[in-house]
Length: 188
Length: 171
Image 1 (cartoon, each protein chain N blue to C red):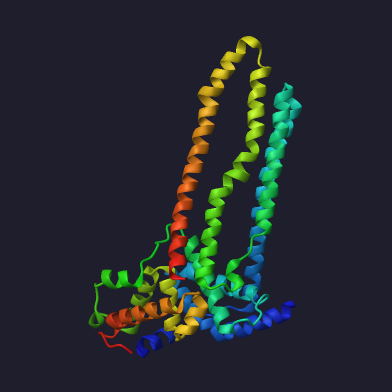
Image 2: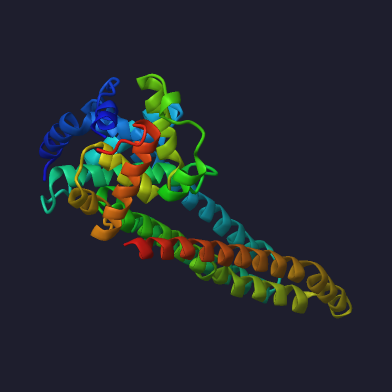
């Protein structure tokens, strides 16, 4: 058995990595993270600007209030993103054993799938519902039936289907991850 | 810890374990360009980890933990990464070539690396650490596996390597 170990350990090393390489790559990594965060915050800022414009431009008090709720929801989502990104560590540098490291990475993915609707979808629902109600009540009396019909035949089914699909896929993904976590728990 | 001390610790660890880190990357990543990236990522993880290394375990254990975790992150991030099989499943499934068919060191190494890449992460890690000549206690310390589980896996690794590379001779 020593032969195969010797063979393994006798492999020639290619050009060694220098400290300068490491510093440069670590810097690139940090810049990439900053750019990613900036893009997420910018996307949030654009969405908030759109709802702010609705408050200014759209008629009807309920639609304006709904837009305000949507802005509050977006701010909540951005705060959650900031909090979660802030808490992001590089667990491979924490010196955890592979099983614990793997388990933590899988558990984090599982929890992300299980809770994403709470902080990414739910916060904007009150705003959308208020805006929807606003479109109905602000419409002239003879048009309300048509608005209601439109809402319940197009928008509501679309939102229910999309949300249902996202929740279903996330729940299935979380179950698969839990199975892998259980396998790791068995060998630990 | 200041940056100079972190740099010094990293340089010492890299000088000592650099070749082993490269062998790990070779075993994990078959693509040459991806492998170069992985080697650098492992070194960056090692350098960053030196800022928090507190000597609660040996430097060797720490370096292997950080490096294997960085390699596992790389493997998890790969698209459509195969889930891998357990050692015993690989032993049963891979009957393609016996030792007599493995001519030359290069071929033997390639075959060994293909075997490692086909394994589940904990099994691959045990095999790699075994090839790096770590004993069972050290492998348990790096992986976090129970001593009994390490012993079973090492036994299977040895049997598999013996069957594949040494014509059944155990050592």
